[in-house]
Image (tube, rainbow, N blue to C red):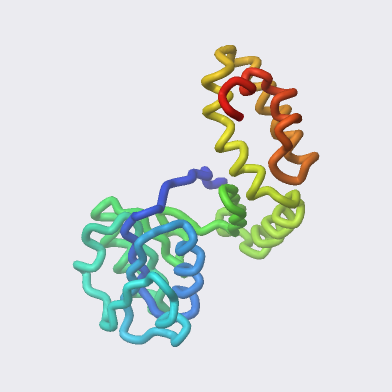
Length: 207
């Protein structure tokens, strides 16, 4: 069965990574851009892990109490029994857990990710083929237009202004579609003349 895609806020969340090897490091690198507060626990860490910015490292074996108070846990060791133990502890406490070597024990999975500014997209095959997920993610990333980061920043900035200036919901929907297409044509934020031609109501708010 396909997994339901759900996006969550990770900024400031307390995330534990159990493991200090290459797999644990990859999970850490994928989480770091989303603003999580990362802690990793392991008896040994790869040198690249030690130099990773913004990660608190606990140089010791995992203890059951390490999962307490966590918002998210990643079991990423090369010990099957330890990963399973971490998963069981998290299930008992209702903590979402990802187990790198056993999809059946996962409460969530890591999709193949594309992050471009405000745009975050993930591809998942439910464990059937990570290779296929990576392929589709790569195809998607290559199809994105230039300036997507600037486009989304502009849309985020102009959205509340349009909502305030245009009370009719159907017209607002058309305006947002026109604005987005104008952004695509411009490869970024449209000029003031184009903006006001689409939303003349913004002419009086100092735009």
